[in-house]
Length: 135
Length: 421
Image (tube, rainbow over all chains, first blue to last red):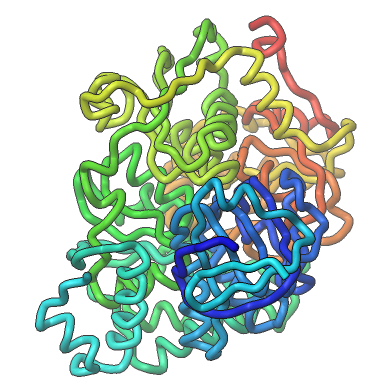
C-alpha cells in the first residue's frame, strides 16, 4: 500500500504502466490510438489507454493538457496518472475534463521513494483518498 | 488555504457573467493544486489553447465564446491549426480547415489580438522586465522568463485563457522572486570559441540542457559567445522540447544572471555538471534521425521565423534557386512577413523558391503530403517533434547548410567546426 496525495481525487483500477522518464503528451501521445509516440521515450509504441500511468512529471509542450482533454473525450486516456511531486498540467487536464464532460481521472502525487516501488504490470487500485493498493 | 477578495468571490458567484465564473472556478481549483495562498494580477497573456487538435479543443473554445468570454488584459494568440489563406496549397482537409478556423474565430471573439504566432515576444506584444504575465507555449514561456525577465509560470493550454479572462493567476512559482533562483549549474568545460560561435551551437546546447536538468532551473556558465536573440530563441525552444525548462539563466547574458552569484541568488549551486565538446557532439547527433542524403523538404521557422532571420537568409539565397526536387518552407507570422517585405528581404527568398506558411506550422496543421519523408531544419524543436508527429526523418544543420542542401537537392553539411573542436 502506498499513501499518495490526491491532487485530483478519484478512483480507478487498472494495470500499471511505469516510467522514470518525463513525457510531453503533445508530440508524445496520439489521442486517436492511445499510444505513446515519442520516439525518444522508453514507452514509445505502448498503449496507455485505461492503464494507471506512472510518469514523474510532464515536460515539453503546453498543449499536453489539450491532448489529454481530447483523449478523455475520445475514450483513450489513462485511467489515472501518478507523479512525483505536483504536476499542474495533468491536474488541469483532469479538472477541465470534469468541467467539459463530467469525466475526470485521478491525479495522485507520490513520494519519489514510493514512486520507485511501482512496477509495470502490477494491478493497482487508486482510491479517492490517494491510497494506492496492489491487488 | 486560498484567500479570495470580494471581487473574486463576486466573479466566482457569477455576478460578472458566466464566462468569468467558469474561468474563475477553474483558477480556484488550480490555486488549490498549486497550494497558492492568494491570486495576483497579471497585465498580459498569451494563449496557446488556439491550437486545434480535434473536437474537444474546439468545444472548449466555443463554450467560452458562447458564454460571452472577454479577455481582461492585453492578450496575444499562439499558432492556430490552419493557414487560412494558404491551406489549399497543401494536404489539409477541408473539414480540418473549417474547424480550425472556427477555433480561431472563437478566440478572436474574446478580444485577443490575432498575432497567430509562437514567437509573440518578437511582436509589439513583447512584455518587459519584471512584468507579471500568464503565457502558454513552452518556447515562449522560456523566452519571456529567461531572455526578457518577465514572470510567468509554465501555463498549459486551457488554463492560459482562464487566466486571461480573470486577469489573475495563482501567486506561485516563477511569479515570485524566491522561486527564480538557479538550481543546477551547467558549466561549459573547454568548449572552444569557434564552436560557441557556430550557428547551431545554442540550439544544440538547449537540447542538451533540457535533457539533462529534469525539473530544475539551469544556469549555464562559461559562455564567451554573444548569442543573437534568435540563438536564444533557439535555445529556449530546444530546452523546452527535450525537457521542461521554463526559466534558464546564462551568466553574463540573461538579465537575472549578471553574475553566477546573482543567478543562484547568493547561494551556492546545489548541483553542477560539466558540459564537454563530446556531450555537445552527442546532442547534435541526436537531433538527426535521417540516415541518408535524400531530402524532400527544408523547413525553417520553429519558433516562427523572425525579421532578423529573413535578413540573414536573404543574402544566402540571392541569385540561387532551390532544386526542383526539394520544397523549401518557412513558417512565420503575418507581421514578420509584412516586415520582411517592407525591408526587401522577402523578395529574394521567394525568388529562390521558398514557400511561406503563416499562422501555423507543420506540427500544428496536417499540411505535409505523405510523400514528404525526409526533412532538414535548423530548428531543434522541429527536429525533436517531427519524427513523432509526422513520421518523417530529419537532418539537423545550420541555416547555411539548409540553403546549400536545398540547392544541391541532397543533404550537405559543413561539419568542420564540430569535427575539429
